[in-house]
Amino acid sequence: MKKLIYVLIILTYTQPIFGQETKEYLIIEGKIFAEGSTLMYASIGIVNKNIGTITDDNGKFILEIPSIFSNESLTISHIGYQTKQISINDILNEEFIKIKLIPKGIRLNEVIVTANRKRIWKQEKTRYVFVAKRR
Image 1 (tube, rainbow, N blue to C red):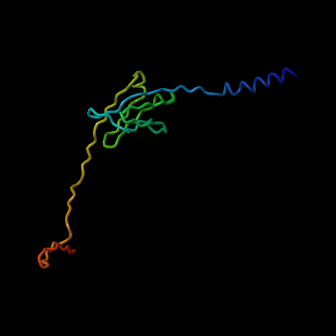
Image 2 (image 1 turned 180 degrees about the vertical axis):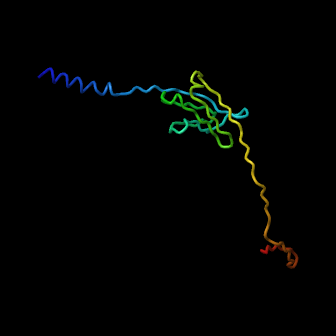
Image 3 (image 1 turned 135 degrees about the vertical axis):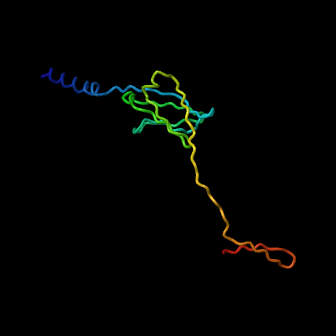
């Protein structure tokens, strides 16, 4: 009977140890820049996952991801620049990566501004007064 109690106690305390998964993490460090200047607050993340970060004031970032996502792609984006995707496997061997984003030109339609008021100058004694009337 005592042996059975000892076995149950050992199994009770060792079960949580064997049940835990050890997760390895990959650390990706780098800098985002465009045309010689760094990009502040650019978004870096794994495609279709809720893992990501943004760059600091110097354009640098550190992203810690579980190793199970090593076959995924990183998406780098910033307003006014083309989004870039990089495979995580391609950058695993690099200690510090530098990513250049290309500016994205946006063509705007022509805007014409017109006034809908008619200018009328009236003479009042010794001065002129501007009066605007709608058409």
